[in-house]
Image 1 (tube, rainbow, N blue to C red):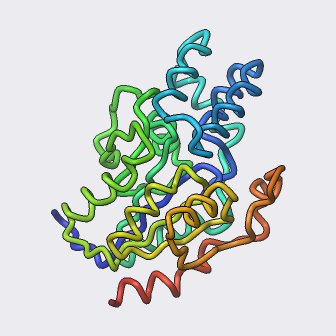
Image 2 (cartoon, rainbow, N blue to C red):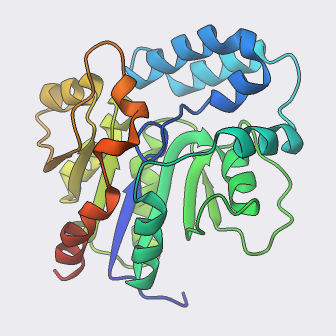
Image 3 (cartoon, rainbow, N blue to C red):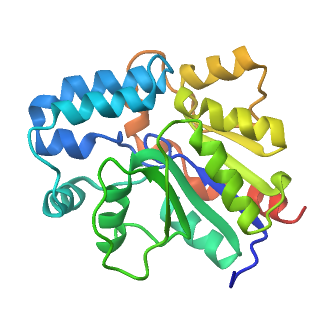
Length: 250
């Protein structure tokens, strides 16, 4: 280990740090699949089906593989984050705070986003291997496979253990029921839990499990149409800096 990190952020990506779903690049390439993909996304983020079931359904829908050039075309057209996300990642790097992306999104998406300089480099990314490309860049972060939502907590724990980061210096950020198991792990171990534009599915999960969300960041997601999730003007992730400074100083 070349860096001794003072604290750690483990955050979901889709509709949490960025206004996109894990499957938008598939909809971009195959527009006819958009309705089915949206339905599958709602099912597993609402904890109504397993992530493994969702990926099996998606694999059956794909008429052709998503090649790197198709992923690059999607990113060039559509890549976006919420306000302050790149700046917060870079600030964490300067402050020796490990920023980990922990998501059901695809490894291949992040490989191409990093190769295209759309995203600042992060030390570790936990993501799904359904779409994954040959790694030709030695400067890529460590990728950890995530195959079920429960793997978020396991992967956070493994990284924290590797870098000797105490659980009370871990901040977990999530938005939907798919982050529920991550919040459950964090609640059990003493991590700080941030609901980002908290959806009813996460609020319901936490209420059912008796999990207290330490901070609800941004406006809560509406019950039905999540249009607010695509409006970046109402939230700035750099507003989390004072919290992270406090956590890192424990």
